[in-house]
Image (cartoon, rainbow, N blue to C red; front, side):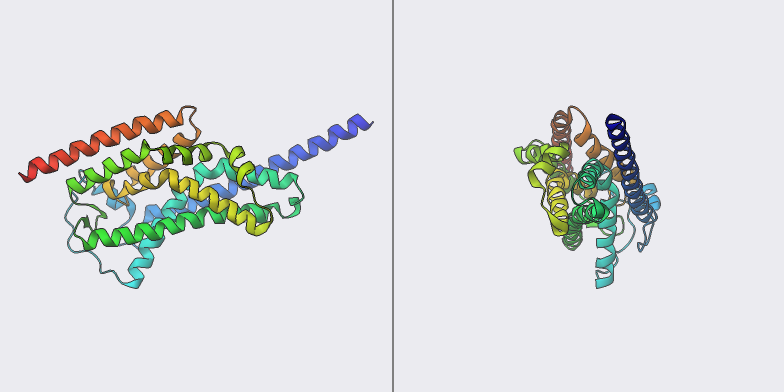
Amino acid sequence: MTRNTGAAASERVEQLLRRDRAIVLISLTLVVVLAATYTVFGVGMNMSAVEMTRMARQVGEPMQMGSAAPWTALHAVLIFLMWWVMMIAMMTPSAAPTVLLFAAIKKMGPDAPRSGAFTALFLVGYLVTWGIFSLGATGAQWGLEAAGLSDGPMMTLKSKGAAGVLLLAAGLYQLSAFKDACLRHCRSPAHFLAEHHRPGLLGAFATGADHGLYCLGCCWALMALLFVGGVMNLYWIAGIAIYVALEKIAPKGRWLSFVTGGALVCSGLYLSATAVISAT
């Protein structure tokens, strides 16, 4: 009787965990779908991402679309929201394993009655970190436009030399020890949560923010490549998002980083050399 009762209880626990995992996964999917929809339709922008992608040209040679929109406070807010929502769409899928594991841990511990709130705060902390990155990206976009290096309407670098330097820098970062250290944390959710878990609701937010910082350290240079391909170029957005997920879950993810780093370095050197030759 005791054995049967224990088996029944264990089965109920497994059913609850499966149900909660499904709820968290559906919630994450909804966040990604809404963010992706916002990005694709270019809410608040003069053109949708589909239109921007259709008009994309070779790297460093954007289509001429006239003068850029003036940087008013409203324009800056819209650009920030564009970056942040795009980061949510791109980074949430690769964070899903850690969010799901965090939710399962909370469901089995003393915080089980409020596991949903803990998980939500963990995700919010993670996304706030990418919000801070988006502030920096917005400032970088303004600075590049002010320096005449970026085409405002197409939101991409208009110099092959500048694009080459950015590709080279991103490639070298891919090969760096700092990238390797951050990637190790992102590739092992269990190790990360064991090392960085904090108690309480505020702790859940802080743990999520910590995970966001490691992901930011891992991926910021890849996200900067959007300035090369076009900030709203869907091919580059989807390609980078898929690559980031593969880098974190593929068995040989670090080797993938080395290969990509080498390819970016070669591409950067080629574009830089092309720019120098064209200028002489």
